[in-house]
Length: 465
Image (cartoon, rainbow, N blue to C red; front, side, top):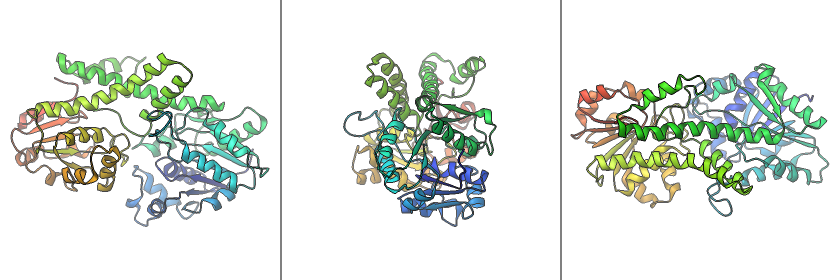
């Protein structure tokens, strides 16, 4: 087993930042450097005001405060960090391709490949390279072939160490992980590399939670775990549509099936649809891999989970339009929440984006309030869709810092993120400020139907008639 003095992580995003912060806090004898070519992002990680960190995660700023400048560093000096580290984590973005072969399904590996070429160019000593990004199966072999053809005479061991973090609970997920997966070659040097990485996690996790596999199993397990979770969300959302037609209540159905120990209660909350960086991307990866092996039925089966998720978002938007007398043109609709779930500022694949897009097509005037997501991010999410010009997006949608200012003279409120603070609002005073009839569309099943109707709202809760 190698002695590790220095770790480098390429990519200072939602995975790299929190993971390296926790490793630094649990392994004080190891120097951990997170590098990124994005100067603005590194500046945010180094900001003296810890509320300005680029990633919002409960518990993260306290860990950064304790370790930053001691054995945790954020830098744009990529080559220096690669050169000095014994272990290099690759934690860069792997978005779904928007062009060419596999468009809309395959992962775009250009950033990963650039990383590998950079490591190959700089490395002068043996390295353990760990893929931490969500990647399709067989990426390790692509990284390996790039690294092995460098001619520097350096020996590289490639490990797959997929992350199982959920936004909003990432620090807890790291400190109390159910399992850590380490995939690598079954050669003596591969085994040594796996043991070296395992020893780092053993600083704070019991050895039996650290599972070693071959590379393929590790990579595929990550995709399949997310696919199974997303499938549960889409399954209960399919039932929520049925509940609305039959007078059943989806919460009661969820509770009834959730008490079955074979099924369990987690991931059975009906909502406006799942978001986040992993579920959609990982399922599309699974679909793409299955298609490329000619497994059409397998691909169709998993693709249906995505189709159901898109249907749920569309159904929510269409219900707003039909309830507001089939026209939302010029009507003020307030969005409570833009992040894809509470306790994070991550908006990737958030349901709010698609619902907003559908309503803006109908010329609605949308006002957005989210406690953690910046105005800049909200406009970037809409502009990325390319449905209309950036000018039109800014004309029709405004972002406010105060929820009470948002609801003045509004026709309707749509709840799109389950932030706890929305439950604490004085809904009586919100009702006073709104135009009548005042509509609330609860896409997160956050509020009490009885209480809201008592106040006077026309209240729609997803999964109930």
